[in-house]
Image (tube, rainbow, N blue to C red; front, side, top):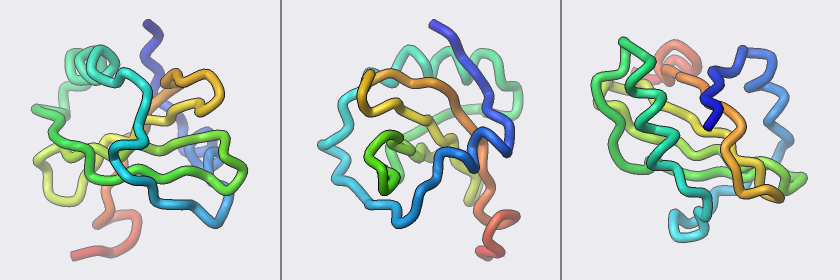
Length: 102
């Protein structure tokens, strides 16, 4: 399994508005092994919790699976190729920094 931390540019390229929020039950990729690899290789992550939300881009090509990290508004975002049902990368996002959420 290839674990890949995406750059800001790669992450931003996965957005095509409007994003559609999906029901957690619609998630089909096996994310457990990927999460284990990310946590093992990312010292700033102590834990990864439940799915916070899932969004699909307007073209239906990428699902963004947001997971809780137990660190305020910081989330692990897994980028899932919908057609292949595989994870192609991840990004760590802090909503406080990104969107000014307090």
